[in-house]
Amino acid sequence: MIPKELNKADCGWLSGRRTLVVGLGRTGVAAARFLKRCGAVVTATDIRPESGLRGTEDLKRLGVRVESGGHVKESFFGSDLILVSPGVPSTMELIREARDRGVEVMSDIELFYRSMDVPVLAVTGTNGKSTTTALLSEVLRRDGRRVFVGGNIGIPVTEYFDSEERYDWCVLEISSFQLETVSTFRPHVAVLLNVTHDHLDRYENFDDYAATKLSIFSNQGPADYAVVNSADPVIAAAMEEGAFRATIVPFTAYDGSCEGLYLDGDRVVVNGPFKKKESYPLEGVPLTGIHNIENIMAVIAAARAVGVERDKLLDAIRGFKGLPHRMEFVREVAGVRYINDSKSTNTGSLFRALESMPNGRGVVLIAGGRDKGSDYGFLKDLVREKVRLLVAMGESRTKLADTFAHVTDTVQAADLEDAVRIASASAGPGDTVLFSPACSSFDMFTDFRERGERFRGLVEAL
Image (cartoon, rainbow, N blue to C red; front, side):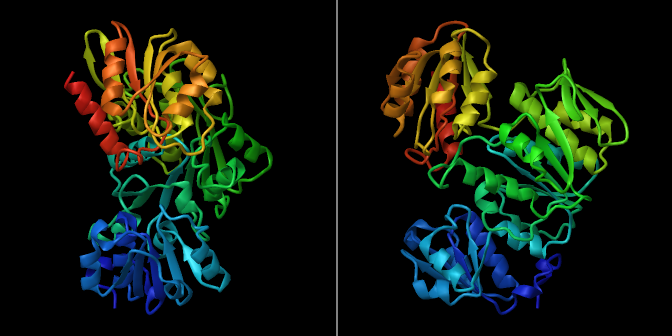
């Protein structure tokens, strides 16, 4: 019997199924809770000791068996279904062996999709996912629609079923990790913003990573929409190969005109596949930079695909201030601007950050953290053009310093505090101190949010 709070869920298919949840972060805990409430027999496992986990006591009270401090092989092979949390590689040996034995393996996105009852708009891409997801959900709310927002943006999708509110739409941010183990997931509107080098410490190569991103379109049909950045080389190649079965809505911030959405001076032009040609002026829009124009284009395309009218779209875009830690202006001190871009966890996001900076060597760049197998070399021309000093920190500081030593002045910092001290002492009036790490935060911080908050606090203390 499904409890009252899950009356939106069609999850009878889970009743009695022996299910293993691998990874007990917030997503795994939420999924285990949902599975148990749907009548599954649930075991949850994590390699961390239970003292380092949160939410396990609540799971135990629900009747979930918790295995911590390592994995039990029999729990994998004796399951009917394995739910893989995003932080756990689906190529893990025990998961691969279980799949070979006939055990079904899926992500929380697939679990959610098989059980939910409303249409989905899904957003993926290497960079810009969270901003686009948040803006798209705001646009739909301004249009009077009841929207659940979840996924990689920080809200587990299975928390959809915890609310008694009835939703009209789900807007989901989807990571490549979550797409690794989907099979039937079919968003009505799927957005792919870009595909640049990232997570090469997890994937065999860039082609493997790109194919995973493109799989978001695998189950779509002609009645669905594929909103794609046609200026991205990976996406352009997929379009040429006929990889999409959905109605394609291309957008680009670089071509003067095209079918779909394009930039014409300071306005976005919509030229199909919708009924009429439209223009969206960007005057008064708080989000700036080419990358944010692309995000806005994607939102316009997705919203028009589900019938949101132009005026409500414009109102929402003009009222959206952006998300923390994404090219966030912190303050100006002695004529020096400080920008917090802690969400920059890959080289593509650093490229976009530098691209949005004025020409001239007025940037003091703080970068570094845990390297993800990235090649920083393609940034050399942009760094040479815009960066006066690179302050490299974290585990990748030597690699960064060696890469850019012949391009600009470089210095290595002991930690973030030292990096801010060096940057503030080196910057002069008219300069910008840009904190855009291009690496993950896990060498020094729990996540990019903690890292960004720490940077903001250091700047406020100057």
